[in-house]
Structure formats: C-alpha cells, structure tokens
Image 1 (cartoon, rainbow, N blue to C red):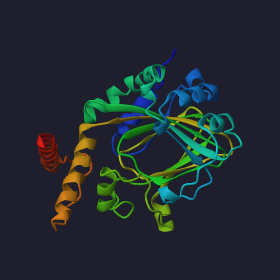
Image 2 (spheres, helix red, strand yellow):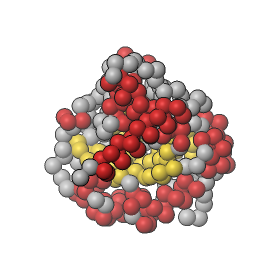
Image 3 (cartoon, rainbow, N blue to C red):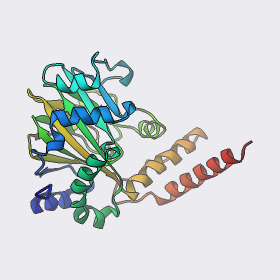
Image 4 (cartoon, rainbow, N blue to C red):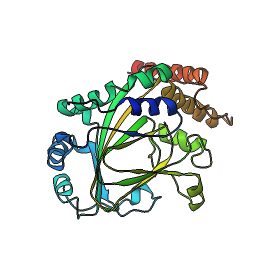
Length: 287
C-alpha cells in the first residue's frame, strides 16, 4: 500500500470524537485491488460458510432476524450479480485470510495514536466487508465494537443514534445480546428524530461508537464497504457489567445500567468474570 489509509486530518477528527461520538473521516483505499468484486468473490469462497451472511436487500428498517428472506443464490453468484440481484452480503472475520489480515493490520496500524491514549490497547481486531445491491437496507442494530466503516464503491447513508439511549435499546436488550441474541433492534418510527444521517461516498469513512444503534440505506449503485473493528478494555467492562446485571435480574434485583465512557464499570465486570471463571472450573471438574 503506497499511502497510509488515513491522513493526519482524519486522525485529528477521530481523536476529537473518540470514543463516544461519531466522526466523518477520509481514507485512501478506494482503488485497492483486494476490494474489487472479483477478488471479493474469491475471498468469499475461501471463508468458512458460517462467516458469509447474505440475504435479500429489500428490507424494512426494523425486521425480525428470523424473517429475513434468502436470495436463492450461491455466495459467488450473489457477488458477481450484485448490481442487479437485489441482495446484501457481509464477509465476516476477513483476518482469517492471510492477505486480508495484512490489509486489516495496515488500516488499523495508523489509528493507535488517536485510540490508545484514550481507551488503551486495540484488542480483538477484526474486519468485515459489506457488498450491497442498489437501494439495499441494513436494518436497525448495534454492535459491541469500536468500528470505522470505509466506503470503497458506491454511496450509502448511515443513520447513527446515541449510544446508551435506553429508549432505543433497553438494558434487557443489551443483556440478551451478550448472551447470544441477535444484533437487530426493534424499530419504532418515533426513533427517527434521534438519528443523524451520514452520507458516504468513495473515500469517505465514519467512526461508529460502541453500541451506537444505526441503520444503513444503500444508494442507487452497487456498494462495497470495509469495516475495521476493535475492542477496548472499556468495551469489555461494559459487556461484562451487562452480564452481571442479568444475573442480578434473575434474583429479583433491578440493577443500574453500566455507565458510558469516560466512566468505568470495573466492579461489576470483575464480579462477572469471577463468576464465569468459577462456572467454567466447576464444569471442568464434572466427570
């Protein structure tokens, strides 16, 4: 890669917003050969089937995951006909592939100066590639990682909502997610006023905070986007605090929700980790 994916201005913009506010950035990856459709079709066939998710793209903003319709095509057929097959696809955990792992590392390497002074080491670094037909919709959902979405081809609008707003995603929704529940969130039309739309074209990127609900509408062209994500110790504390709260709820206690950054959640997090360690040890001792 001849140039750094993010320049000095993008790093300043990220540092000013990180970790709790979205930020629009610029990147230099739009002509990268690994992000062309034929290369992505080949990658999709190298990945484990479980790490390739695809379906019809003509979806409402809110949808039950179990009701998401299949598109009737194979992975390769979907990518190679993406311009007209009306589909949405994500290639997950691209770092499993050595060539794409190098790409992911090169993108994340320059972000440390903006990220590490605030939330510490970048943990569990992962990459996802989204390939979408014109007008495809990614329903309303949230994710547990710090995330930067880089637009490579086409245009899309990502509408991002405040992280930690309990009307958008209540405590029990967070707890269910961390017990293996789906990322999709129930949608109500009244939520719309809380969102801020970010329009992305080739060379644009947007930082999405941990657990900030969002939904995406593709533009009138085929879209390719690269998502680079990482966890922080703070994000893990938030997750484990939700786990602890679920245990408290089971015994009739209504616990306070985990606090957002810059507050920490060390006590609940440590308690939950200790309980889970004891559970694993007990299971290991059984005959």
